[in-house]
Image: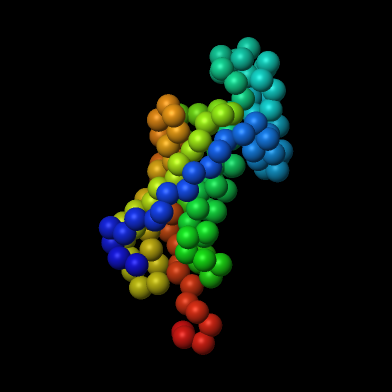
Length: 132
C-alpha cells in the first residue's frame, strides 16, 4: 500500500429495508428513518439513512478491502446529501497517509444527488500470521 493508492469502488444499493434495518439495529427510532408519511410531514421526500448505518458501511468498505486483520482505529465522517430508498451509494477511498502499519484513508460515498458521506478512516493493517 502506498500514499495515493485507491481502493476499488463499492456500490451499495440503498433499499428501504437497509435504511429501516440499520436504524433499528442502531436503536435509532427517529421516525424519519422508518416512517415515510412522518418523514414527508417533516419536509423530507422519503425516509433516509441514519449516520450510524453510514458509519457501519464505511467501516465495512475498509475492512472488506483490507481483510479481517485490519483494525479500525478512528472513523471520522460527515454527512451531506441524504441516502433515500432507490439510491445507490458508491464508496471510494484513497490512501492519504502511512505510518508504519497504520494508514489513513480518505473515503467518499456519493449518490445520485451528491456526496452522502465524506471523511477519513485510520486503520492498523494486520500482518499475516507468523510474519510479525
